[in-house]
Length: 140
Image (cartoon, rainbow, N blue to C red; front, side, top):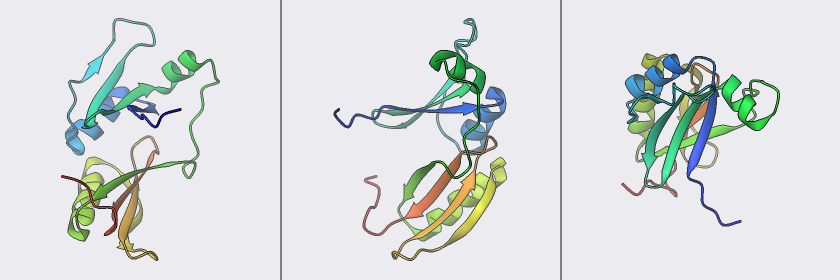
């Protein structure tokens, strides 16, 4: 398998609420909800970086499409990492997420490996790490 990650899909309880959190609260670009005309088709897409999108899809639709029972992931089963260019940017993103309705799981602070990071959960419990890593700075 070639390493070509193009889509991250998160199951959500309330698609409208999740759209508002990511688009209006975090400022991720999206054209809104598409596919409402199809049973189990409503989805919201967000542009992340070149070649990578975030998709929000209701839990019931994701379960239907996969054939698996509907369930919610455990809060510590996975996290999404958002690398930023400075400690101050970690603090700013954590504050923005909090204002948008996220739960702060771990306030930003120094890490054992020399970086600075914090964790928040979106309204559906998906865990995000906001991190400044001096060895892995974003390209832009």
